[in-house]
Amino acid sequence: MSFTAVLPYENQTMVTNILLLNFSNDQFFIITFLLCLIYCTILIGNFCIFIIIRVEAHLHTPMYFFLSNLSALDICYSSTTLPIIIFNCATGNKRISLVNCIVQLYLFVSLGGAECILLAVMAYDRFVAICNPLRYPVLLRMKLCAGLAAASWLGGFLDSMLHTVMASKLRFCKSEDSINHFFCDVPPLVQVACNSTKTSKILMYVVSVFLGFTPFLYIAITYFYIISTIMKIKSSEGRSKAFSTCSSHLIVVTAFYSTGILNYIGPRGYSIELENLASLLYSILTPVVNPMIYCLRNKEVKGALRKHFWRFYFMTDR
Image 1: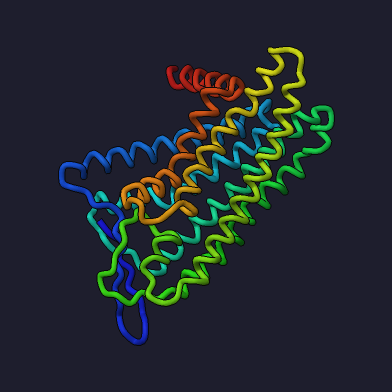
Image 2 (image 1 turned 90 degrees about the horizontal axis):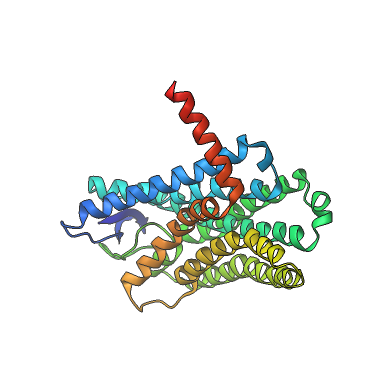
């Protein structure tokens, strides 16, 4: 199965096929069903978290405000890739215009960059809550939280402009040139381009290191101080409670960065199947993990969901 982009180059119509998935007939329905199931899980799980935080008054705190932004971001993030993949699986459609390909690339990279920044912001929230609990209401007022969340979204979209501009300047000369990939992203487009891609590759690595590694380094330093503070707590119950407030965030960070490193910075050419798997996991793992982790490990979110579920059940039962 493939995407096809028709590209003008030197007054000729050039065709580039980007293979997304090679499904055999016996895999077709199974994979389509699994992708639909995953996408529905992402939408329902993150939408429930977003709504419950909005309607439950005691969840109107900085930590849950950032979590609601993460859920909204994950819904948008997965929606840039999965619906198109599912549509192509279901219809057998093989074509995507260059404009749509560039738009998908822009949105995907934007939302990925925004998530990098937002995860760092959430680490700062946990740092203040554990290391400076008495100053927490002062340092993290809701006006500042709204500004930090807005900066996360804006930073991602501004960063993606660089990649989008460079991708729009790539030229694809070989008819029926193709790559195995699931959606339009920077690495596969750079691989099939026939003009010089040195600048694009340098930009990809520089921005990946700056936008990806800088927040990651900040998160690592932040958790060094958080863990140091927690270990000074004399009560084992207190240490356990403090760790529990950070563990969900750490799991989401691990899932996001491990797949991101494989997708953008990891070695190329070791296995097409593994490259495609890393790319797919990068686009769906965090959106799937986020609601599961926060619903299973967070007592306040679980309690709020349970309360509103039973309220809705008894209202509809009447």
